[in-house]
Amino acid sequence: MDLDECEFVAAALSDSRVVQHSDSFYFYGILEIKTLGWLSPQGKKILQDDLQRLGYPLDLATRYRNPRFKVSVWIQCVKNMPVRFLSEAMLNNIALILELITLNSSRNFLTRYRLWALLDDLIIQSGTPPTRIEERTIDWLVKQYLHRLQRKSNGRFARHVSRAEIIGMFAAHADWILAQHLASPAKNVQKVNLPKWIRFCTEVAAARLSARRACNSQGWGLPEGRATNETILDLSRFGKAPVEWKKLIDNALKREKDDRKLHRTAPKVATRDTSNSIKVETID
Image (cartoon, rainbow, N blue to C red; front, side, top):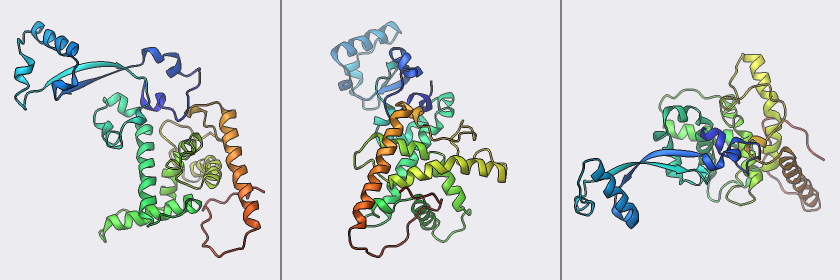
C-alpha cells in the first residue's frame, strides 16, 4: 500500500483498505542507532544478544565510546498515525528513503505537500504584512508564482512557463487543497480565499476536458493516476462521506453570502480587482 492510498485529510471511510487492515499495516526500514540512549535496558540486551548470536561478540557500551561506531538494524513497525505529522524537513527528504515501488505510487502525496509548502512561500513573499486571505485567489497565486520564477532566474535565460501550466499545477491538486481547508478551521491551515477556491475547483473538471479536446492532453490539471472523465467535485477519497463534504462546502459559501450582506451596509471603499481568472457565477 502506498502513501497516495493510505494518507487521508479526514477520517478514512469504513470500507477503505486502511481501516479494514489497520492492525496489519506494517512498514519496514533501516535504523542507525546513533546513541545507546535511544534504547531501553531491554533493547540493549536484545541487540547485544543478537550481535553475539551472529558471531560479533561486541560489548556495545565499550564500542560506542568510539564516535564512528554505529549499529544499523532492520525494524518493523505498525503505522498508527499519518505521515503528514512528520516534520517539514522529513517530508522534503522522504523521497530519498522510500523504495522505488513505493515512491512511484506515492508521487501525489509528495507533490501535494510540496505544493502546500509553496503556498506558504508565496504568502510570505507577498510582503509584510502578507496579502489578505480574501485576495488570495488562483489568479493571485499565478501572479505570485510568476514573480517567484522571475526572481529565481535573476536575469538569466529560463524556460517560458505559461499561465495555463501554472494553473494546471494547482488544478491537479485543487480538490486536496480544498479538503485541507474544509477539514480544519485552524488559522494556519487557511491559506486561500475559500469560497473562490471552491468555485475554482468546480471549474477544474470542465477545464480538464476542454484541455483534452483542444490539445489532446491527457495530463493537464490532473494528479497522477486520475481520469479526465470526472465531472463532479468528490472529496470522499480524502476521507469523510460525500454528504459531509457537501455540508462543509455549503457552510463555507453561506458564510461568504452572509458576509457580503453585512458589507453592503458598510461604506464602500476602493480596492483593486482580484477576481479569479476562471469566471464563475456569483452566488446570490
